[in-house]
Length: 203
Image 1 (cartoon, rainbow, N blue to C red):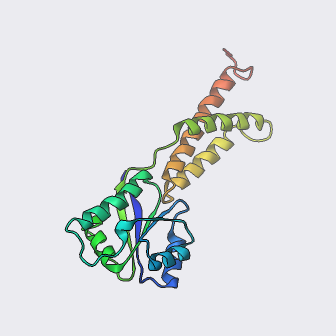
Image 2 (image 1 turned 135 degrees about the vertical axis):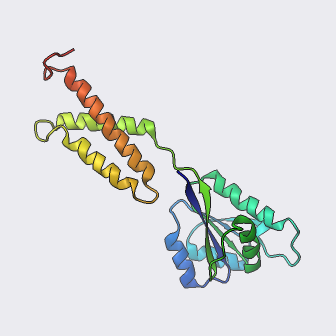
Image 3 (image 1 turned 120 degrees about the vertical axis):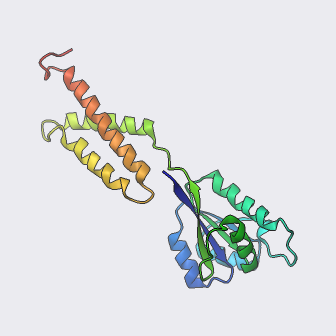
């Protein structure tokens, strides 16, 4: 399934209220790229994050013919380093316009100083090992609580949580992991029961 990585392109004309709205939308692992200018520093301080200065984002009077492609390359390099984090780019309006023409040629710029761009990416990989280990732990917990709770209760609850997470944006991989853990817990629980005195034909 195709997902999209969010790139927030912020003009140095953004006021304090707009900067605060960007800050509220940023993910916890977001990386901020900025031109090494006083205006860029103001925006970054409002975002409350440490920035990565990029000289290429600084305003120029006479841009080279390939400047747009070089801007695109800088942004994509930081985006590809971790496809599951937001990237915030702070630059002057002329640089922002040039960047958007190359980064998102099919997307119309949003009105205002902030434009959100989505770069296609694959789905976040499911942590299979952690899911399997979690399933084993869930099976042990279900067996320990067997005298108090039905054995099927914890796996069913985990399965329901997994189904809910499947429809939560950005949490699909966690939902898949929880469902795998629930299934693994059922298998482990059945194997333990089959090898115990509870099962008539114990192995």
